[in-house]
Amino acid sequence: MTDDTGPADDGLGDARSRAREVRALYEQLEGRLLGRTWTLPELALGFTHDAAYVGRLVLAAERTWDIDGDTDAELRHKLAECLWWLFVLADRLDVDLPEAYGATMERIGGGLRRAVGEGAG
Image 1 (tube, helix red, strand yellow):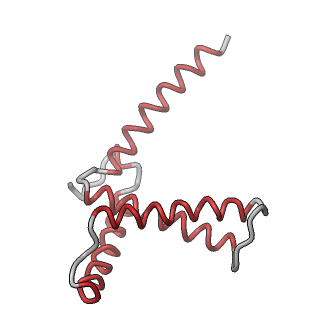
Image 2 (cartoon, helix red, strand yellow):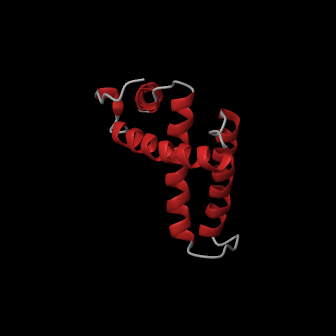
């Protein structure tokens, strides 16, 4: 995987680099505390835990679920953390997430533009 940013990058190259830097720090800490780094399934579980918590925070933002603390601050934190997890997982799976995102949005957007255009008239 490269660190180059290009037209399909959608500005995510810098975010990927920062995610890699933070993950490297976690790996140092894991090595010291666990004697190893987290496995891919452990990383995936970390992501799903945080993603599920986003669901509760959405309920809290809609005032249907109480949480301790500042809901908006927690939501901002967990959404950003979920984005970080996606970069970490993509990196471990050798997926160029910025490229995949750009290509996927182009494909979905193109299909939607055609569907919307067909409905006009």
